Image (cartoon, rainbow, N blue to C red):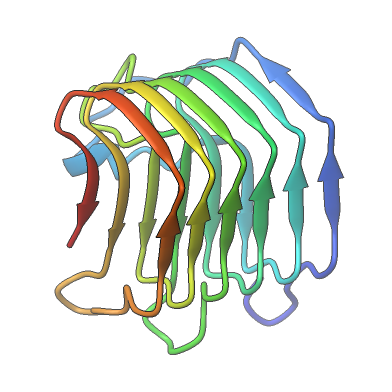
Length: 173
């Protein structure tokens, strides 16, 4: 919870496969689908490393409103919506200092085609680096703020390889 966040947890080498999600209207970018195989909310200093998530009905990894979290060296494939989503809160500093590195994310948006492979919003100081992203129904990597919380600042997006993304490899909004 916001008042009592999970802190300093490492989840390494987890494999999850063949999940489902009830059908509902997903909204823009499949944002209305909150379900994920692995979800962190209000977590701080946590690491998800070496995950293998496949054949998922919804998202692979969802991170909301934590601080200093990291997803690295993971394979996320054949996903109903987005492979990795991370979003900050409207409070300053919440959701910041995120690292998404060395992941292989592919075949996303199989159920909800408007999903991005990697989608980061309202996060300052994000590093999105050395990811391999392909076969995506919408955008490969999105880094954005919002109309109410324009906080996509100080991000580093480097050395990613994106191909076969229907709406483009990279979106900065």
